[in-house]
Each structure stands twice: as structure tokens, then as C-alpha cells.
Image 1 (cartoon, helix red, strand yellow):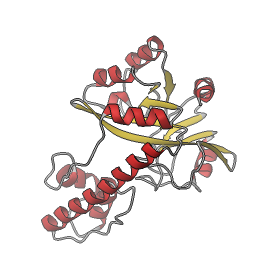
Image 2 (image 1 turned 30 degrees about the vertical axis):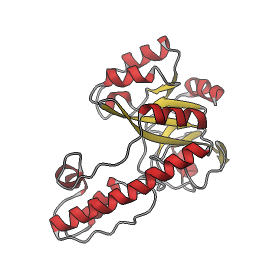
Image 3 (image 1 turned 90 degrees about the vertical axis):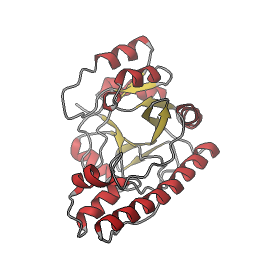
Length: 257
């Protein structure tokens, strides 16, 4: 039974839940603890690392993409404090996200002659643009927008600023109680990702990959390197608890928080 879903997104980045609707979604799923881990952004309505909202424990977290040599990895920070360095980094990244989104929109509109309706505000990302493409006169649905236009290497793709693994890790470790590697088996080279996880506090193991995955290497690493195990659904829609930690697993995380 999932007690804690430690990987959830809200409308603060590219999710559908809000801080107000998270407790209801958690209650419906029987989940007691939710970590809000929006992309490259702290939640503006969370002033404490951990809060209680309508019977649900909410952990203020963040998901930060970093460059690790030839690889891009996602780090999860939990129980975040608003340090000067983390605030400066997220503000810088959000400014870059807005500038990047504007360039992508311009390329899509020029290529398709469609007009896209996208709010250019902090948290904006390619999912927002893909939804706008699907709702426009352009002949692409959400998936096709990524596959044929704005996905990596696509004709309308624009790269964005990504901090180094070293910079991102140092800033998160200063601001957060726990820093871990997200979804190690989503990367092109899972072993390389796991090698970097050994430098962190935790590794995400329960995760809805959508296909069968042998999590043995991550479990072995967690045991050998004495890493915490985190887990979550990576929820971008209105349902939480698809994956996460059971009570015993969460107690170990709770003690570190």
C-alpha cells in the first residue's frame, strides 16, 4: 500500500493539481504524504519544508535537471528551504524557461501558421506548448507535437539552461534535507545515472515506468551505499499514489527529514 507519494507535480510547473486539490487527491488514493516536486521551481505558497493541509502531510520539494557529463539527470530535493543560492538558481532557470518558450512558440507558429495560446510565466515548459499546439489549428495532437515539432532535435526545439551536476547537487544539499536521483531507469544509460546517485542521499525506486524494469541494480546500490529509497508516481495529472513508498519505507525517509 502506498503511504507516501514523493514525486508529484502541480500547476506550478507542468502538472494539473494545485496545492488546494492535493489533499483531496491524496485522500482519494489513501495516501498520507505527498511531496510536491515541481520542475526547477519551488512552490510559492509553501513557506515551510513540511506542512499539514487537510490531513495530508505535504513535503516541499523540487525536481532539478542537471548536466552530468554526457548525461542529463533529474535530482529530487526534499524539505526545501529558500536559501539565497537556491532562490537565485530557480529564478534564473525560470527566466530562461520563459525566454525559451517564446522562441519555441515563434518557431511553431512560423512553421504551422497557427496561433498558440500559452501563458509565458514561471513554470512554463514544453508540455504547455504541446497542449496549446493540440488545441490550435495545427494538425498535431499532444504526442505528435513532441514527436514532430518540439521534441529533442525537432525542427522547433530550443535548448534551455541546465546547471551542472556539481552546482545543482551543492545547492540542493544546502537547501534540502534529502537529495536523490529520480527514476534511474528512464535514462539512456541507467548504470551511469546510478553511479552518480552514489554521491547523493537517496535513489528513487518505486516508479511507474510503464513497462517491466529490473530495479535490482538500484536496490543493490541503495544497500551498498547506504542510500535512502524514495518513490513516487511522477504525477502530472490529478491522480496520486500510482507508485510510492509503503509505511516502513517512508519511516526511514521521515527520520531523515
